[in-house]
Every structure is written in structure tokens, then in C-alpha cells.
Length: 138
Image (cartoon, rainbow, N blue to C red; front, side, top):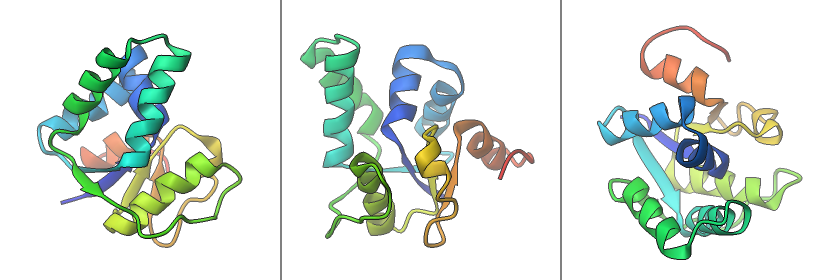
């Protein structure tokens, strides 16, 4: 099974705006791939939802629980320093620790690292196309 780390921006887009990121979450829920997450990613998502989108903390925690109840949790043994943004390094560390095969993101800084140590870095639409066996993007 494909193991994927979703960047915080994918979760935010899915929860707040819908579109391809929400479709990606639905694919994860039906078992099309295994989501891998770390505590640091969870904390960043809750912080983003509460500070930038004014979600109440309880609502943010419930949304996260729903997203990650079927996810595999990892504790990265070390932080990776490979990008200009420390938040991106958290995503990279989670992917390496979990032996994920793909990182899904809309972040141009992360996308510019594709591939990273053998891990594909794809935008949501390209990953959905890959899951569905269609050709799109890198």
C-alpha cells in the first residue's frame, strides 16, 4: 500500500475549502492509501485552524481526530534540515521516519525538492491521478 504524508496545507485546504484536497482525504478514508502523520503535523494543523481561521480549539481537535483516526503515527527520531522552512522539515522528517513513498503538498518550497531521498513530492491533483492510474504532473 502507498504510504503518504500530507502537508498541513493539504489538510487546511480540505477542511476549509474542499476541492482536490477534500477528495484526497475521502480516498484515504476508503483505504486507497495509508496516511502517515506525526504529532508535529497535528500541532501545526490545530494552530493554523485556530489562529488563521478562528476555529474553536475543540472543533479543530475533533476535525484532526477524524482525519487521523485511521492514520499511522510516527515519531521521527531526528529533525531533517533540508528546506528553508522548518515546517517543511517536519514533513520531510515524518516521511523519512515512516518510509513513506510520497509527500502531498501545495507548497512550492517542498515541491521544488521533488524527489527527496527517493520520496515523490506531488501536488494533490497529481497524487489523485497516480492513485487512480491516470497520467498527470510529475
